[in-house]
Image 1 (cartoon, chains in turn yellow, orange):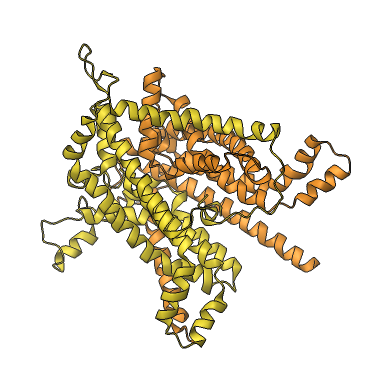
Image 2 (tube, rainbow over the protein chains, first blue to last red):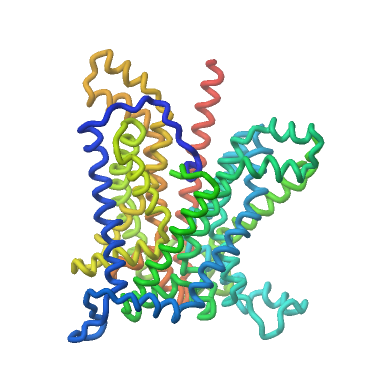
Length: 303
Length: 266
């Protein structure tokens, strides 16, 4: 599947031809497009994040400025949201890794003798992508709704108090985030594990390493590229997500993440500077994490 | 070898995980047959009504049609632009190669809210009215990098000797491209196009920031979520799911048949 391409290191087997007019013709349209609709919007975002309300203007009108205090304001005002975004993202990413690893190992290593089964299982992994993201999240909401048999039986066995519910809690939001992003973790893990040479594992056990040790010293380190791209592909979208944590879906005001405040500030109360400052902050932290993470693990060849 | 763990525990685990992954899909499918009223929360009995009269519910089919339209247009542009970049990246040597790679990687590493809010700020600054057109502009942007990644893998596996053979036989560059390169790249290009359409069709966050008053299917579901999503949305979701699964399985079976035929010949 196309998603598998994320973690593959594309090897250039052709001798690259010399640069010329053709290259420019091939590259220019796409790169110009990204310049116009990706780079300049980022600059626009930074500019708006530093703007101030128009003293002469009315509601929701802002003029360019260099108001760095906007950042201090959003950090103090939305500190809990910022913490939740990265906290939930961290927990959900780790959970997704724990859930996905054995599955990816089974598909990529154990199921190797049956390629058709492998393909079928990969299709099942990405099957959730074929149904709307919002519909699958709503399905969980309704299954765990206050009137559902799941919640009432949890209350009966005393796991939940009779006035306690699941929807709207951080538990439910993290549950939804983990579920929705598992395929992003499983596929890169699979691509790494699929290429793993089993003879290394056999060598490990031949040398009297316990299965646990083989895993720790051989399997896991060899699958590290997959782990890295998987965690990045899960962590980044989760940190910016606002569907799962939204009050209409699995969350409540107490679980609102950065995405929710960006949406509310931008689309509901038209506080563009705050929304933009939060966006720039989110992107900045993620870029820092990505750079640090990629540098430390030594796989800079992600694309 | 004594990986006894893999014998039963792993297959069982895989089955359980698949059940977990499929539960919400199954739920959505079942509730598309619910004889529900405006909302679709409680099971009220089985009916084919919603499948037969999907468009009776106001707005569902319009939103769905708009999503298809946006998906098709964005896919065409993103695939064309992305394929050209992928060919350039694998086949040509040029300066600023790493900057180009970075520029392509960044949109994938940027959270959707940031992409959405950034574009919305730009449209706001330029005074562009938001609507279907701005949604398409946004979708082309975020699909482009995914197209490049997908097609790049295919270009890299292409043997340049085939093109050389074409040139040796006096084909002009255009003939070489359309008769040799393009047909060989086609599986990669169509995979990229499918991915691009799927991404566009299911996108909500970026769309929501740049849609103005125009509806797409995910936006319809999001707006409806506050008061209850009607069963007709489940019908559309399930129908799209079935169609996508059929396409994927058909491609896989087709590939398997080809592979077996080749193996027989050899």
